[in-house]
Image (cartoon, rainbow, N blue to C red; front, side, top):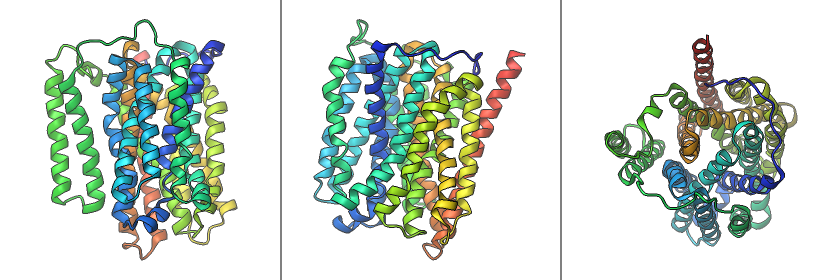
Length: 469
């Protein structure tokens, strides 16, 4: 059931706190890498001679591989073990981050960012799978609140840290500052994450299904990115959409006949799982756009310098961390994951609508900051409950699959949101003639997407109540 009777959140045992701390740090690193580069984009463009398309691909290459490989990473965590996938992912992230900081040109930087996404997919999914497996029952809410705090703080702090580091050390610093964290994760994992007795190589990995769903995810994200660059009716965009649809059809055909499918088809017919994934897509689009659009708004509309705009985002990271760590577990205990998700999406929509009212002359302290804090609270209260709703519909033995579904829906939604809302902003601004109007339209569109997600969450609650009756 979507909404079990609320229970007291059990304290986490002392011997598992070290495990949880490492897993939370890993998620913090993944979210930091996804956003820390945003404020540094203008500096990167000047130093490497990149135009708008090249700068967009520095962001999009990460989302492409990260979002496209999450389902495959989730299944790999179930088959090969979360600990192995955690080590592989952390090692790839460390190597790719160093390569990005040393990149001599745009092509190398884009390739390094894509490789970062590969490692992040393995690292994030393995960490979430280990949390779902290690903290069942009543201890899960507290563990997931820490996970949510790391996600909220990493996403928002990345923007703040990116501005400060870029102003002090140049754009290369945004990569070198995160590399030591990834290296530390590689060194600590063998002792903090001992391999359980059951973690061994299994047979029956659904390679054709994995290839089909991964290819479909990659093609779909590429289609969205191509639509933002080339237009939604352009031939490359339509070809990518066609490839995504064809590979998706092949995936469903494969899953009907294999003995151990990567995603059991009966699971997709479960309304909690399917609507949970849909809410993840919509919520991911609205959440990621919060920090992406705000970082650009502060510089292009309020005309703040990168370092100042980075400082302006610090309160959002603090608010997201505090809400996730202190308020979120209490709300989940009293309201359940579904109602908390609904509250979070409504707050996120209200925050975007408030941001849409801002203009060039808006005061940061009296007008901008309250809107950012409201949106940050919505991000914190909607991210983790989405994962919990999806996980409630997936068997415990497939915690990697639950992690993959939750992460992939959020990240693919984020890639769609960044591309779609950027396109809306460009069209509404008259290709740069009225930048403020463009951002207003983008914020309104993001609010509409969050409200649609809230509507689906409300339907799930209504359906669960009617089913219980």
